[in-house]
Length: 199
Image 1 (cartoon, helix red, strand yellow):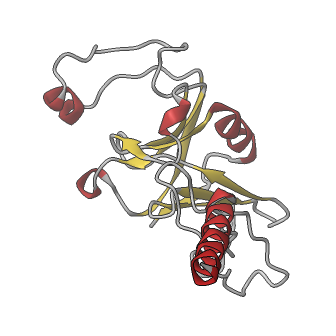
Image 2 (image 1 turned 180 degrees about the vertical axis):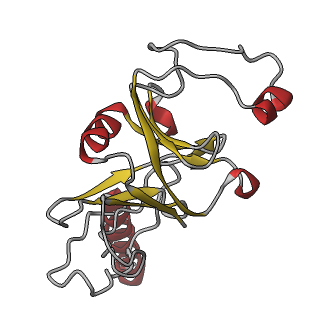
């Protein structure tokens, strides 16, 4: 009887400890004292709809931060921004393309900024989804949300979304999505010519 209680007690202790560790937030933002030092690996698994928030240094990705720099990590589903003078650093959760063949990686830049963008499906989207409308004006039904940063790659944008369930997920047809309040903030921080790198 004593052995049974002891085993039961040990098992309960283990289960309570395990449950409390899973109840903790999946990842916390890590801001290193030394920005060149890599952040520690997260201890808990990343949930599907949550970005991996890990502060990064710009140096491994850009030779400078002229005009500002945006890094989109499609694996961790996070967007990083550094201002021209490096006094501002922002880290946002993002949505990323549904599949690898919809994902474009490499260097581009912001070529246009639009408040209240309209939306039209690309030819490939229309081919996959012929029932989609040809045009959606600005407003609450618009898939681009409240603001859009147009990139030098045709059809690619960093934009907001009214559907907040998409953030932190593989959910887009190629673009990078942010919460509307985050794209509004990023919109003010960026300029035409801001560097963009998707990895």
